[in-house]
Image (cartoon, rainbow, N blue to C red; front, side):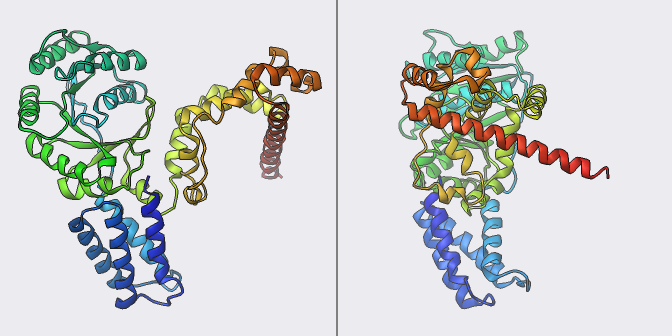
Length: 439
């Protein structure tokens, strides 16, 4: 996401490269290019103009320090304005009710039902809440079954009433059932339509007024650009929702919706969905997104993802094994599984400064680790614990069993050996550093 916008903004900053100071002339040129970049990203003309006016005003009024180049100053100004336009700070969900009711609204095809499942998993696994899903989409026949499937996937109950056509009745009964079961949060999935129409708006407005939810979220497909912004405006006028969820951010999106919605509706973006997996839901942090747009990476989010998979006891055991040079292929495989749980490898690498650009034309499939897994799983328990015993004949057997080549097996074993050596060297270096402090 934002790849094209990032490239265009980078080109606009080059106008100031080599300039000794900021002037009205070079600022006007740079701002003109920034406006073109925003319009190309499907940001509305009005929002793009307002953004550029603010950037120009700040740039002309700024005093450039001797140690800071004009190009660097402009990047800082644009970064701050991007973060401000997208909401400045992350806004938390309101979960104070008993149960807290979250109403999920949006058009058909926006990923609303899938998001409901993802949100249930997020609240259950990361917030420690007891969650229930309510199937109040009585318009689309497959919606209830889809929600039940998702509920089973994430391990939360789903309330539904077969044959009932009144979503208000289903929602009220779901609240009562959630209260009886001691549920903390009830996520209510509602009906959508292909377009914003009066029937949809009347239904969602009635449901909203009847439920009086603690939190109302509008789900929108980020790939629809300015159409997403227009539907966001229409829904906001009908139900005055609390926040926006952008889905399909991993698709062919230019980023216009993310940059425009807050400016147009005044409502914050709270989540972004970046894939089909139930874990593929990220909290929206405007400043971090601004970092990524400007090629600065998002190391904070990367560390947070790693911490979610971090097991302190397991890490201590691994630490001891590395120190004794007992790191095995079983340990290697366990670390591989933890990295997989963090998300798409290319997305993770893109969180490191400069890597988005470096990996732009590199295709890293989601199943990139499959051959490695197949090779390790084709080994005997003894081989995994004692990789030094894997001779030529064993390697050939492993290659046949995993459906890979002998070269693939040799490559993996070489990578494993290098990894083990680097880990030992890093640990020895850390120990020497600590001992040095005692001298």
